[in-house]
Amino acid sequence: MKTYLGIDLGGTNVRVAKIAEDGTIIATVKGPSYGQEGPEKVMGNLKDLVREIPGWKDCVGIGVGVPGPVDTKAGTMVLSTNLPGFAGYPFADDLKREFGMPAFLDNDANVAALAEALVGAGKGLPSTFYTTISTGIGGCLVVDGKTVSGKHGFGGEVANIIIDRNREVVNYLNVGAIENEASGTGLKRKYEEKSGKHIEHTGVVFDLAEEGDPIARECVDEFCKDLGQYFATVCCVCDPDIFVIGGGMTKSADKWLPGVVKQYKMMSHTAVHDTPFVLAALEEPGIVGAAMLPKSHGL
Amino acid sequence: MKTYLGIDLGGTNVRVAKIAEDGTIIATVKGPSYGQEGPEKVMGNLKDLVREIPGWKDCVGIGVGVPGPVDTKAGTMVLSTNLPGFAGYPFADDLKREFGMPAFLDNDANVAALAEALVGAGKGLPSTFYTTISTGIGGCLVVDGKTVSGKHGFGGEVANIIIDRNREVVNYLNVGAIENEASGTGLKRKYEEKSGKHIEHTGVVFDLAEEGDPIARECVDEFCKDLGQYFATVCCVCDPDIFVIGGGMTKSADKWLPGVVKQYKMMSHTAVHDTPFVLAALEEPGIVGAAMLPKSHGL
Image 1 (cartoon, each protein chain N blue to C red):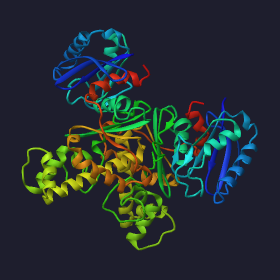
Image 2: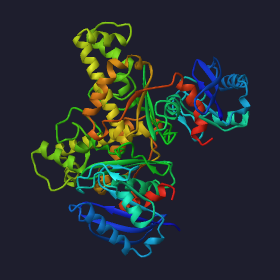
Image 3: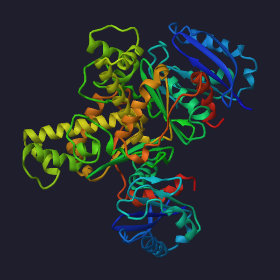
């Protein structure tokens, strides 16, 4: 079976793995990424880690997942908030030269989507739309085994989709952007604002709603309506074969996913009501998805 | 050069053409579609028209554009409001058996998108998002020369995208659906409601706005903001290499497109501000796009 090298690079940590084409993790190493110290240090460290993987030379290609939008054709990061100095750095070319095999770069949400599409919940389906809901909201469409990253790598950068223009200004995102309204952070913030109370974490809002707290109920209802509208919007654009949902908020999915699907149906044509909403199947979509990048390019 | 048969079937008329792979129309015949008389009559008539095309046997495949969503894998219409009896009818299979060549079916907005992507304004680009704005609003994403029609053929059925939930109920579409708010019909309706006046056609709203009519100005501003938000939303989902705009409203594009692009930029990351907004290049995208369906399937 073919094997690939997957690299999951963050601002703090980096993981490198040798992964089979069915998604099985064969070997893995990890360490600090030295993300604040610039490309030379980060790349040197990363190359050392690759050489620690037994049989890395047998792999047919390298894939890397990084935070933020990526120019997938150039193999470069477009923005690099968490990895200073990497915007425009010839990331894929550097690895290709170093290891003598094809190398590909994509956004970390996109590679997670690719993993779920190829060897996870969307396996075997023509298209998958992956959404991660945690402190933020990201996503990616995968069609015929390829991520739709788009002209600027902003395909699936769904955080800024306006769900309701008549909301409060929160930050640099659009007023009413889905990430501010229906991420875990957003739900917590809105409950705290409306109630005047401080809560430890987002899960408390669901607990309070179940106990009958009217403000918590209102917040959860709006959260479900906002996400339902988000999924209905995505369906109008690309009508995926499956919606796969990942991220920290999936831990409490039983508290909100049925409400989201109900709202999705209220805002969608009956013909699309049977689209499955499924939780992400993989434990480590980031590293597996990175390794799937060469596969998605035909290797 | 390879040639294809393209069929543009509507509720009233049908056109059949022999078209070269570069989009050149070689021969064309047209006639009434007998759309209200059921599949037997419609298909019999359509087959007769195909046989009137000189050298139809030299074509390598057939493509058909029809109104409404299509199950592209099955080659059937999902809904057939304008062609009673056709929902579920084995359209592509019937033509394939009759003429002994591969046959494909897709929505008429999707085939127009395909034409623009392959031989029109998006030629040579990896992805195109086509939007038609006239009495209604439709669209389609084309990636790597294929329409993203999705699980139920609803990919690009953008009419129902909610642009602002706090609007009036208009019809069966979602409250605040883009088609009701920013189609030609929508703009005319909203001006008439707000002003209490009757106008002959949508273009009058733009004329009145230029003359300083405050209600017309308000309507045009909202129209631009609504469409700007629509394009910003689509960009978040798929970040296309180009936005191509067709449909009747393009005749007055100079009156509104600059305003739409300005709003798009206000609601989008600076990285995506250079995405071109271009008017459809083809005179007959419907029939050309139908003929491009076999090409998009590798023929």
